[in-house]
Image 1 (cartoon, one colour):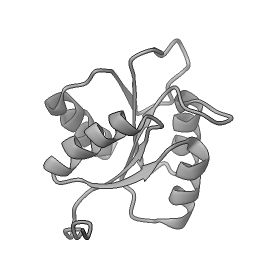
Image 2: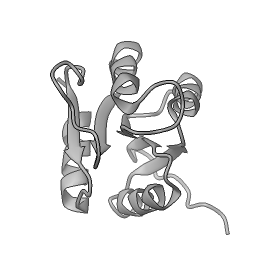
Image 3: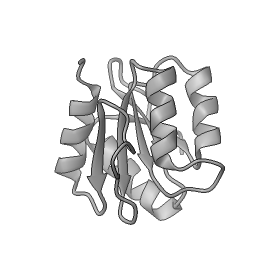
Image 4: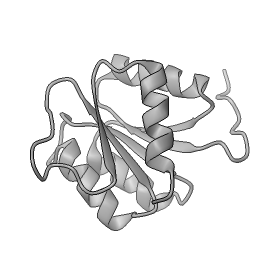
Length: 128
């Protein structure tokens, strides 16, 4: 089966989530809300996608993932290197402490309902 074709002006979300079932659930929510999704399993793969694509509007990342950095550090580096890209961090196990979130980064606790997720994504994409 061919993947659905991207609709012009459809926001592009880079989804960084290592758990396949959680990632697929999020993909379904986002597609239903008319987002285009690019998937990565860890920060290294996500950085490669950010470097190679100029159409990513927002990063949606989990906190706990394999690799050398967690989602909080990944989000800080995205805000520094790609300030035009919105960032939304989600987790059901780790919560941000003082200084964990870069400015203009949104955090949601898992499990997250579709309506809350879409609202937070749109807020994170809004210009400052």
